[in-house]
Length: 433
Ligand code: DP6
Image: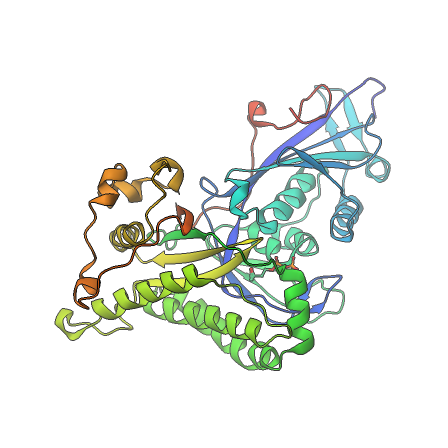
């Protein structure tokens, strides 16, 4: 190491992901080893991602982390496991410009600073541990010159939070549960990259909820302890579903993809209900969204349009508990269906009168344009969708029940940001900018 003062930094950006075949239940809680394989789609980091800057300096006295502007402790077992795994794989580095040389041995004594931000409002509760932990592992691996491929890094991120291992890749990703007791074969692999099926559009409805939080970690612990259904799911249902899902993704077969994703999401919620005490991740608003979309799918699938329900199943629904709030995820098979979906969602769930449209629909705003909506007046002018008109019942609107919508699509995996102006760390002090 050079004698003078120095700070070395790396900045990276990592996406979040949403499971289409869910991970729920661990066979080892310390190593975070799951009871079944899972498959996810990575969401476009332009709309949802974590950016993390990491730094090392001989002046740092201990490992520190700041998350969304606040210092948080790194003393938790999960962080410590990741840091230990990374340090043990660190290699020599040399920065000629700064005259710095760090040997493999030096990494045992050197401390790091981590500064992390999410590019979406934290109030959404969507501050997914997946993107955060994946970004921490990815950026530190770059800083420490860890010479391992993304699959090996995924096994480290997995020890921070299970779903984080799937955020090491873009597109569709499978987390292979593995058989080894030490977890060495419990890794994520990419099934297809984000370009393979890029006409999918994902709309996330962040639903206001007064429900009490049940964290994934404690929820799935209770499920494994008390649910009889979860064993059947892990042993009998998921293995077959994984094969079918891989096939559906490979062939871009939306009806099969939709059927499998809906079935798996429903079974996940069933397993939650089969837990003692039962876990409820859906509220009235999420149920309402689901039944409207079901109604629409059924309407589209009537014989008049010469199509069957399953073939016309344009939208599928997933629910994911995100901290205190609940988000409903809707995936459309193309932009046209997504624009029609957004019109319906905005018709039933208009924003509060004082809400600004640009903060009510965030992410890929071109879907709003496709839906012909430019301002609040356009939302007020939306007419009831035909499937509602048919029932002769006045359409009830639920103003303010959705906090906001995020429009996004499948996206790429983690990247290093080389533009120094994007670093979150002051290169002189090693502290957050
Ligand atoms: C419902 O990865 O948050 O989103 O491993 O305990 O940190 P821990 O849990 P976490 O669980 C995610 C559960 C899920 C399904 C999924 O993402 O597969």
